[in-house]
Image (cartoon, rainbow, N blue to C red; front, side, top):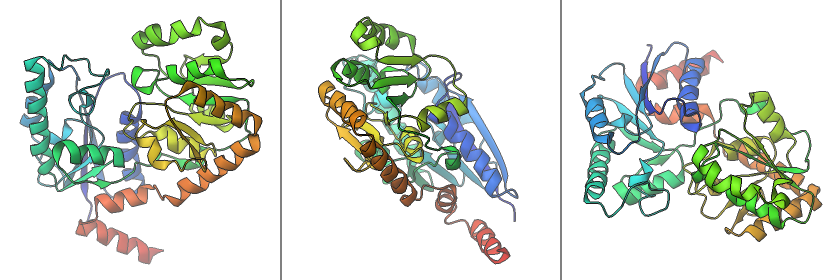
Length: 364
């Protein structure tokens, strides 16, 4: 019997990144793995503006979503809709009202009573909505820990796979460290850029990604006025094709990714499948879940000279970079982050899905 699966998420128009990939890949892979399933995907534009949040949530609650046999939700606040069989694969909270509340990444005045009240309401809304789900998965241990800390909700960690692991490859261990990500404050590209001032080798830093203008003007451009730094850094501010990005991975010496408490980070997987080690920071969240220090990457203190020394160390010892990159590849294979595992977890208690697996087993 065919299953009718509805995938629902919110999104911010014209912001392209892991959130959008997550939903698109889930939809495409469901259709690929189970062509007899009826799969429909709905993306609802949703602003993160705190003045609009509650009205948008109320609008979502009014929507009729009893279609299909199962509803899979992800990004806030798609999971507030009602459905008789709702599964949440939780990406992240509205973070400035949660773990970023007391940080510089929060745009709100935390002493404003209206903002304090908004935070209380959102936490209450999340508590009720998430507890109404049949099952809650978290995309990482980092996210699962936040769910437990702020909402007292237990969740099962289910790492999202890449769309196609096989397209990644390694060609050489070149002279540059690669940082592929949206250029924005939470990714903190300014840290490795500043670290380049202290490198003693000829190692270079290549950064690619969509630029957030305010962050770039205030935090990147002033650093690049130092010729000692700008001569070592290349920023690619144009759209890269998939082939161009893969080539940059394939010929890098290593990959660096220094976000603040990242939810997950596909970049870790992309680096490892490209047989490149990953350099990250102790407060970078998701990426640290995959790194065994000095085996398949480095988890460093937020210290510019230490970062520079690590870049130099790899430049002068490319055999080490290669060995650690090969370790990274073997490590990610051993984690079995696959779409088969995803669907087995999501549909674990679905009798029709189990019947589908049994039939396919005997067909083989």
